[in-house]
Amino acid sequence: MPVDPQALTQSMPFAVALGVEVTAAAPEEVRGRLGWTPERCTTGGVLHGAALMALGDTLDAICAFLNLSPCAGTTTIESKTNVFRAVWGGRVEGVTRPLHVGRRVIVVQTDVTDGDGRRVAQVTQTQAVLTP
Image (cartoon, rainbow, N blue to C red):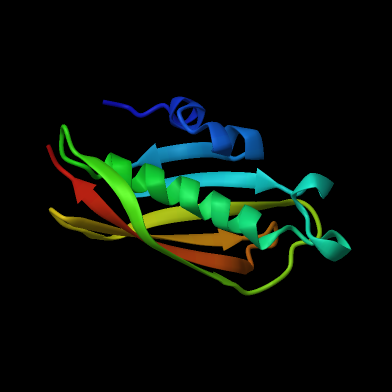
């Protein structure tokens, strides 16, 4: 059954408030983006690291969710972000792929790039699988 990226985004109020757009969603890959705005910046007009982390967290959560078995849930147990370069404008794009999909743990990774395709950040997240 096809997955509606906008419906997934709408189910996450913080992602909506931040302006995250999910553009594609499948168990093997989730894509999204976040535009630069002054409200999302730290000093010097640089896109805040927390905005990069929130983009990664949003896409990671969706990817983990899409890899769950029926009736299972998920919760983050670890999230690690490496930031490699500053973003002063434009937008960033994230591509998330699962690294491990197990019965108890799902590990996903998001590569965040700028408009020139340069890696800006990498977010790796471990999610516990919650079963009834």
